Length: 404
Image 1 (cartoon, rainbow, N blue to C red):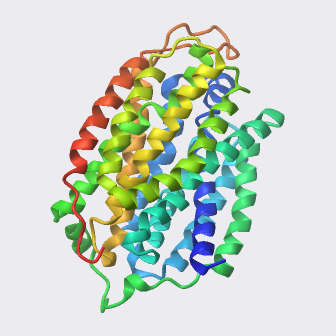
Image 2: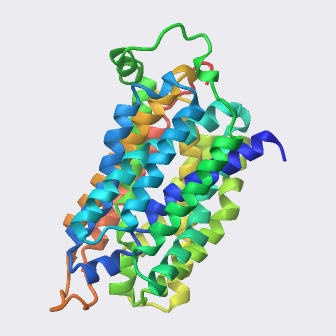
Image 3: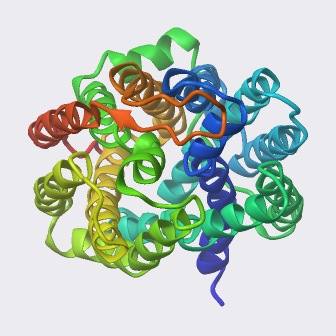
């Protein structure tokens, strides 16, 4: 196996734990709302605590991350992420879980940006979309294996179990990173001194191209993340799924995107990243509209629709990520990707909060064991479609930076 493939496999494994750690909270939403007797708004705070913390840490990391060997940064950040995830496993209550989710998010947000920076540094632009597509297949694996397995052990034991599993797996991956990831200093070549924070901010916010990349990222997150946190609670409360049947959504959707994610990356390299993003960006509006207006239907129909959403939503994320990594030169890429991750996480958190305050309980129960029936999810769908249109327009403003 080539060194490049080993690098991508380990990075994909690390990204898998980060994505599963972030995703598992959402299908467990109906359990949290029932066990903790919390409202949709309180649940949206639980989701957003991770993203807001990730956003803050990502912005701070932007001023330091390009000063060090990428491997050193990866080891430090992944150890912190592992500790934070294990802390979630032992959280005894909703308030404590909010705090531990914030700790995990503080490291997890930087982790995602750092992994993309490593791939961008190590893989030439002509093959970069395929490399990113391979690593981002971790999203699919997290969906087809991670989330269903997490839901299974949560049902078998308790909601604490998935986080204990992830923390234990993180210990193993830390060892692999230390042993097999080489020193990565290409971004330091030619650098005689570290950039001052003000210079970093100028290189990102003072140049129209990376600035447009950040605006594009923010808009795309509102288009994507306003509906995602409430898919599982909506399927349980409004469509008629049992909590056990939620596993099928992630098995089907994740299973499909395991194959389509690398394919989309190759497609983007061959036919153009903007063109592929535009096609998937238009098509994904169809399942967004249908899912947010879904009434009780047979299980297979709901799974077909959610599977379509997984494929098309993932289909616009792969080329858009590649486009954004190329809007700035390699010497500033780590800082830019950290700020970009910060913007991405904060936008995701704001999108979840926005949805949480729009969605209400249509028929709130009288006890903590009652199913929560949600209302106004259709309005969130219209908002997501509007942001999707804006994202397609903004994508045309992005240019490839010199040396990217």
